[in-house]
Amino acid sequence: MIEVAIRHSRGAFTLDAAFTAEGRVTALFGRSGSGKSTLVDVIAGLVRPDHGRVVVDGVRLVDTAAGIRVPVHRRRIGYVFQEARLLPHLSVRQNLLFGRWFARDRAGGPSLAAVADLLGLTPLLDRRPAGLSGGERQRVAIGRALLARPRLLLMDEPLSALDEARKAEILPYVARLRDEARVPIVYVSHAIAEVARLADTVVVLDQGRVAACGPAADVLRRGALFPGRETGETGALLHLRVAAHDDAFGLTRLDGPPGCLTVPRLDRPVGTGLRVRVRARDVLVACEAPRSLSARNVLPGTVTAVTPGDGAHARVEIACGGASLVAEVTRLAVRDLALVPGLPVLAIVKSVAFDEETIGAVEI
Image 1 (cartoon, rainbow, N blue to C red):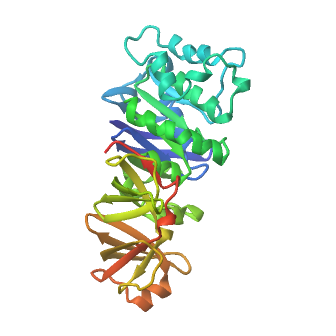
Image 2: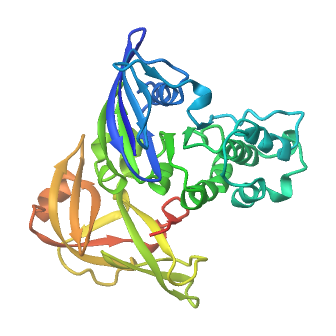
Image 3: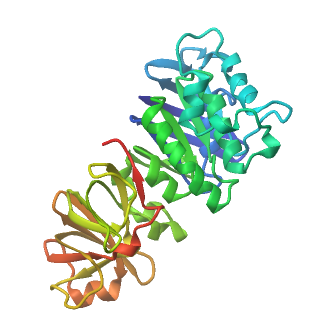
């Protein structure tokens, strides 16, 4: 449990944010300048807020009304920055153990071997930072923070300095950290793909204030909270399981609340739990059963909401079984199909719409 209620001014900018979050990963999302980094600096103790309080698992780190401000070195918070900031003259092993040095007075916590295994660093322990890729360096930075035995891990846009290939390399390790390390994480990002892959709770900041806070599946349906190109990246977040593989055609069948979904072949055993993002821009809406259609996923549902957007766009929410999908369509399509709440429809999703950005393993 993380409780934050902070008011702090920096020049003309004022951060006035309050939220309560539970879960393994709380994502702070917002445009540049929305206050994300200032907020994590307050939690870490690097910024002294003008007013407010920060409570982590019942421990008050800041309470200006009560005169409480726990020093940085006693907060037990690990901080992973955008850049790895490793010590270049030390090996990977020594960089990792540098984090343990800060926790020498704390009992318990993972061992060096356990952290190296968790983050895939065992083959790299004797190498120097100069010989590592950007993704490898960032994994070392995460391991160093984890070995400090933190009660909370802050990750401030840890993938923003990496190219797409390195991001794809490191995301599975962050997901594994979430599922296995049992250390709560506050994760700062402006990328929907990262938030949808990792977060339990999403806090959206806009001009220093909380525009929304709630479960990731609820917040990511609200496209208006994510302007620009990220709007089309929002949609439904589903928890599904691998039901079967079709090796002849290279497909995998997933089952869950909305019904059955067919996706490209996954290298996951039957029964594996998955977190699957169905992007609003990938969903088509039909009022009658299509014929001779290439799309494999045709799910019956009922329109629950229609929200006009900017320009030509509109968003249609569709209840499919025990789940809710979102479709981004034109306002003209809304008129021509007479889409209104209560109307039975079919939600159609191409199998090839699913990729590494939309499917990730998760404990469910």
